Image (spheres, rainbow, N blue to C red):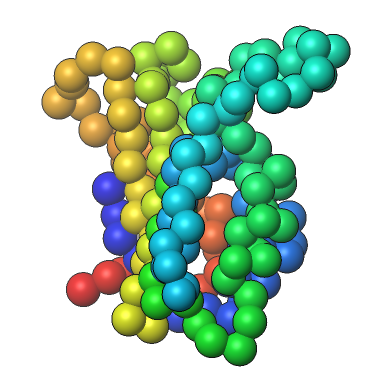
Length: 166
């Protein structure tokens, strides 16, 4: 796990809420605190969709970020900065084999329960933390380290400036 402070919050927020930078992630959960706290459970509710669309998206456990981004933007935008927010993103299961291959990690995708990116804003600081969840306990940190490196590369590729959190 790594913790990074975003040094250019304005650039990050534009990519996060307006751009497509984070569109490849799913949202597990989120909350935004303004005049009250808005909470989002990102669990994908298949029953809400018509049956034809449900078949296309049947394997999703959580909601794709593009489906929630506009709603979150409507809560966050305005003249007054939110008091706080937190979003828990995860890499979709179908992208885990690509992550393993790109990171040269010799593990099976089904060993991984989730690869997470937590985005937290409070007291004027925007922090990113990584996390992994494996289906069984192991002392091997290969997947953890690979995910940390993948996220740092992702941020650099997208021009998101960070520094190690103290």
